Length: 314
Length: 248
Image (tube, rainbow over all chains, first blue to last red; front, side):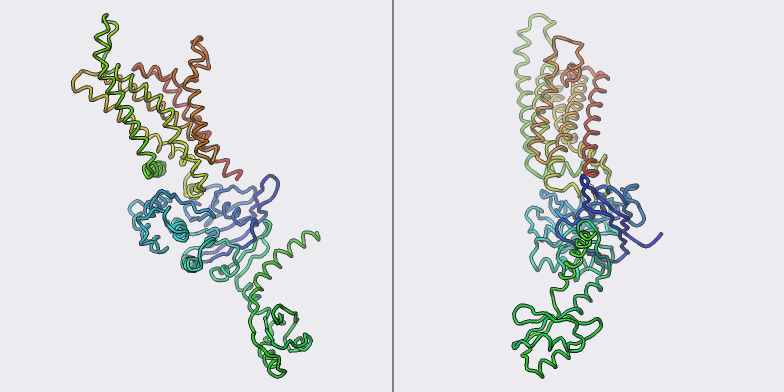
């Protein structure tokens, strides 16, 4: 026995000969938050459906805490809490009624149900909504009910499919905080196509494109690329590109919009101070120097685009 | 677990006005027929000169009420069964059940039991209503019991068929229309083959098998027919839902 809570082994799903997901393998350890990234239609939701036993994989297998989803679905499903992309809410129920049904269906001990409902409500900030009909709740609160439903039986693995889609910024912030909190005790898998979200809540990232896993690694790898790779520098008096490129530690310079330059930094170097000094000395009129915020998107596009290019080459 | 699902179904039936309204309307209809039966009894029986034409008040009122029940349920059951699965499909709530530690058999049987429990309220109501005749007359409890068993099996069969049609579509109304048509055909099938008493097609009809119960006779062959009918459609429903998981 190993300590993995989720093991996906060569998952493949074919829809009439076309592979929606092909050969996806990964492991997730206890207490990790895994971000599942990918453009629309990349196979995120399909993978999640397979992980939760809602869809049978064409090939490969899923193990939850060592229990095979195909062989012993009941035991495996006990360990999972799942919030699909479309919230599975019974709108005619009140929050309390709905959560009680959820607890009962997830084999929560009869005597513990009331307590479990209270705890789930408290964790999702639903305490004052107990007697309201789910139908009458706002989008954000409905989403919270969806999450409460997924964590009510205290599962080992919580799988949330696009939990922040369509919410307002305040609600998004609340739900991200909630995901982080859940991630301390459970393993969490979150799918999204919003990059900053991954950076905020996840400590492990997977990028999936056209059904294939194109990146699987620590969030720090992505963060380092984002923080350390490029600088966006603004000058009032544009210097020659060559002058900037001469500064030690600058690997490459290119022009950007609004009198800005995008400076790529050589591996391990820190030319920030040198750039500022040079700007002051030569009177370039430096007005902004900041890490290039778009580079995470760049990384993402690079990863997904490279894969396509490779395929064409092959 | 089957009971948890059944409980959930019952709860959602009573959470909307639909369940209450159908229950109230049906009780009103049965009550009216019961009252008419009691009122007409002496009138009709005093007109029957020969003793052979006379029969008991239980049967007179009972066939009135049970006849109506088997007919009116043809409309009521599709209305109740239509939402069982198709509404879950439309609201995309099926993953909630699929990702809970439940087998598909439990989900389907649970929903079936939920609906049958709801309908049993009516069966019990009718039986109690007819039993009140006992206050002023000796009545035939065996007749009521046989009719109750027959009605129960008939409604359970309606429910199983309705549940299957509900699993085929994501439009509850479509499910209701199709199950109504199917039930209607099965109800009147024996009329088309009335000329040939040994016809196999007529044997498929509900009425053919409900008749013996209606006469106060509990025939095991008829019980087996209803049980097989229920089993067939429950298995078809289970297979349909399983196909969702396999084919996506």
